[in-house]
Image (cartoon, rainbow, N blue to C red; front, side, top):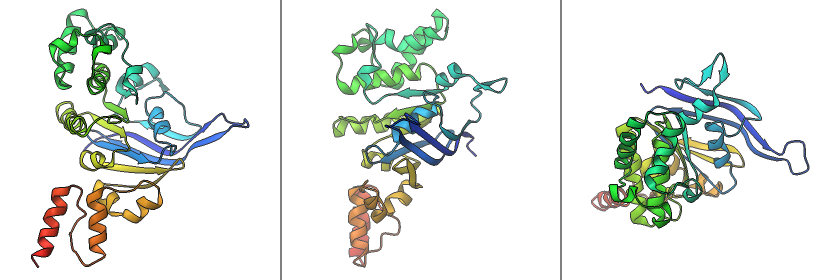
Length: 286
């Protein structure tokens, strides 16, 4: 059984408390993360997703409730070791150009290991290994970040975090602005990272089609609360609830729901077009 890495209980977070602009961003949130799984957070803009992931690696401190980092060894003498936590829960922000700053891609990936005191003779190995995982070739390592496309720049930002060897990788909108082909590539990379590194991934995304095929579990948020959670099939089976939460659904599930209302039997909710097509053919054959 996979180990539990993070447990969040009744978590609350308030921006600018006790001021005229006080804003409750999170209220009563319960969340769990296990080793080796991919978890996605979905929800309308302003639902609290980004605030929640910022709490995972200690960028912010809860206003109420608790976060327990289990099996991550981030406490010394009963006190949270912030530096240690930041290396074990790595964060890639929504805009990678804000996170990539060195003169070359090589130096950007090497920056983290250098800061935590990795020996010089190990750094090259770490950079090459991480670049290979992200599909970054040797020629690209010698380029300046401003020469890169948006998709490659995003790979570099992720590689820079992976070079710190985190146990949890947090991605805020990793596929925002990418074309469908690049999204397919990133979906494959995320699955590959999970398999190669046994790393857990928490992803904030509005791209429901890719969330459906990449995730092990999904949390749907609204107004700072988790309103719906489960496996992708469980979550996307609740088409009406997703609509009420202003999230919407994916095309295969929406069409399957419409057809089920008219007597079709799909067995389980299709998440991809090929599953929808197979289910329709099965029904036509009856």
